[in-house]
Picture 1 (cartoon, rainbow, N blue to C red):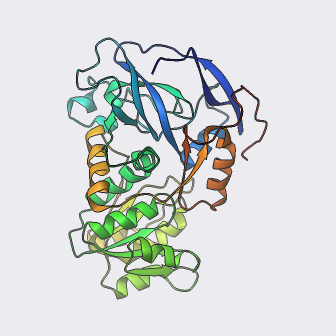
Picture 2 (cartoon, helix red, strand yellow):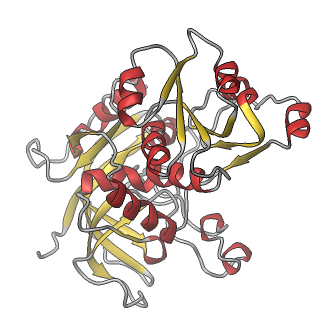
Picture 3 (spheres, one colour):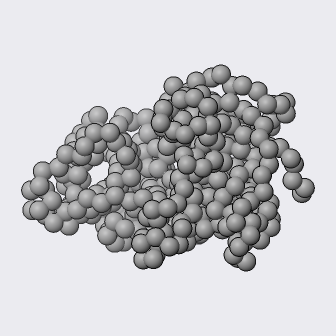
Length: 355
């Protein structure tokens, strides 16, 4: 398919403001590829980026991007070919030369862009990306299911892999939302006994259907006491930003249990040293994954039939997609599809604030 000279994109030009614009198509630079975007997931981090007064603007948000390679820049590895289905996540491609890269810690590279923050993301029909950040998309996955796995999927997949829990151990998932609903599926299929922790009964049926063996409603009972009554959790995967809730749930860890933090809250985590020292418990953060690890998450999703639950909207309804996500009404991820029915093809200002 020949490249158009322009493409449509959703861009933020002021905090909380999105606009639909038409941008000129640029060829990829050295080490880059040009993607024809098929779908882009909508993430809570996108909303934070768009609201952030310090974000360098104008900027195209979006970091759960699936598309096909439309053009190759100079020096791109022969592994990547025109027309190949690929994805790009939050981390936009490691440099290969920093201290972390030399140790193979590509997700901790100190010189890579943050997609949607320091370079334009996937709320667009076209996107430039570093080849070192690309992941292959399995043929069995459609774009709308693959997109959230590039963020929510890999984050929870890697957290479980790093948790130290073994098959048969009790694993608790705190927060049953965009990340948590993937963590429940992965944990069940990895052979863990799974406890879902949420607030209220409205999410109980979904949690059990997604793979939890038991649902713990913190409005009705103390989650830590319930976990201890089950022998204690070997791992607690905390997907929410409510750090006081995380601190409370940590008391339900078994000796040598580990808390895996995924949610980034604004309040410090509170934990008594005796809880850690007395039972040799640990707290660890988990930051997404390398391109290879993301491919493992995608392949595991296919093998285990662990797929995100998604709502699909066209590109021009990005502001509404973010509103649904922020309200908590979405179950459980929202994906912008470039193939969805479109409004008339014209650049227009979308004055709707997402605050």
